[in-house]
Length: 121
Image (cartoon, rainbow, N blue to C red; front, side, top):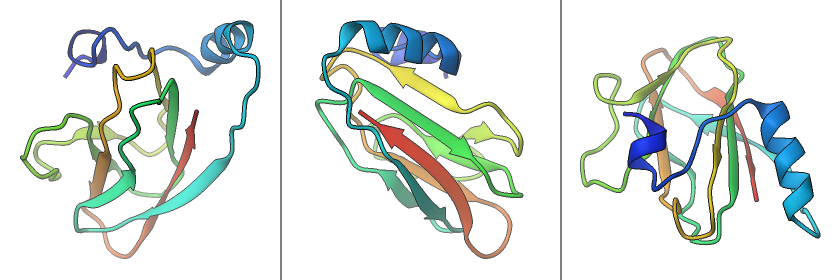
């Protein structure tokens, strides 16, 4: 899956680029970082949000995670999810409101709970 083509003109960019551009275009920002558990069963880590303009997801666990970014009925698995490896840079999605408001689900193939950090605006 390429975010540039399938997420309605949303892009994946470096954190520095995003925060630099984002600060120029917004008046007030209310960002917080949430830690969410991912399990061996598909788990919603980000709720649908039609007003989303920025989403940052970081895998801070010791296990690769797999994400489902689209709105299809297919459930996320370790075989079909977008892989976030341990130590990867954060996944950054920026877009205009309403262009990418899908819920995001995740799973991992290890054992126990794994933590992902989420920031959304």
